[in-house]
Image (tube, rainbow, N blue to C red; front, top):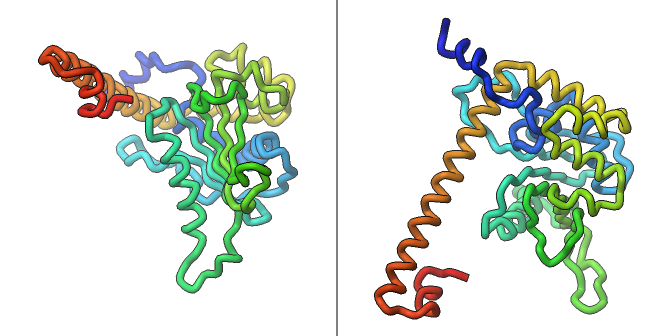
Length: 268
């Protein structure tokens, strides 16, 4: 028996792969044959009618487990030219808001080639799905940001919008269709998937496709590789935090003040 075969005899991965994992999300929503699934999700989030989408970075599910994992956002263009970028975020790093703003701006810049015209720039929309609350100033599940005049609150232009969808606040979402999609994305057990799959034909199709992906050995290996990579990153981050805490403690033990420690270690 090969090492690979033995891996799957002792497979302790979930029976159904979780959609909130970024690679599983892209396998599901970033596949050309699942265009109807992506359209339905976008219609609910953006509250607009969408007839067609063009995936700009479709996933290649034929890659083997030794290939490097590519960027795992889902980028698409709507029929009116709007550029959509959807990203799953498992953890909220301190620089996340700045990074989201940067990538939103970059999507605008990338549209202007040599000799391009500013009037040809199409709106860009970022949809960020977070497991932990990123927008602490609000209690909402779905926050939408754009550039507004400070007092009268009218938009400067329609070129940028950022949607933050918070999986930890699903119970606060008043839009039932959006709530159902977020419950589906956040689910891990079959009974939880079925609660919303029975209500929505497209979510039911997404669940059927997810079960097919979950039964595919190669896709499970890709998920496992991604999970291992994430755990390694989290482990290094935890170690760095512990080392920082120890350094701060030793610094204070030498008689320095908390104000000095904040300045020296950039603790806010």
